[in-house]
Image (cartoon, rainbow, N blue to C red; front, side, top):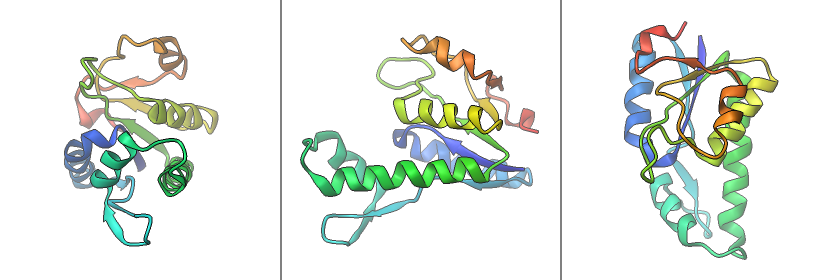
Length: 147
């Protein structure tokens, strides 16, 4: 199966680990790029970009241009895939955190009639109903249930 992993960039290490495990199970896996271009066109690690973005103001055009590129790129991966796997680990004192981008990707997957797998339980967040409404398949941490 072709699977796109969705989740916060803060979970980079976990995403890379799960990607390897899914590939070992025979799946083809898409994730976001490991590098992006900075304001001078030089490639920087995505983690460095994430830190810059967290403190960027609204008029730092290159930052938001890269963000738009990243959103479109990941939407294309969702469209390419048979399913998405949402890696929702604890973040910001929220158990099973799902951020805004991931919620958008879940909505797109739902619209495109893709399977939506959720690694951990649905978080207690203001948009819990929206998460439940896209009917995710709960894995309870068990990647072998991805089929």
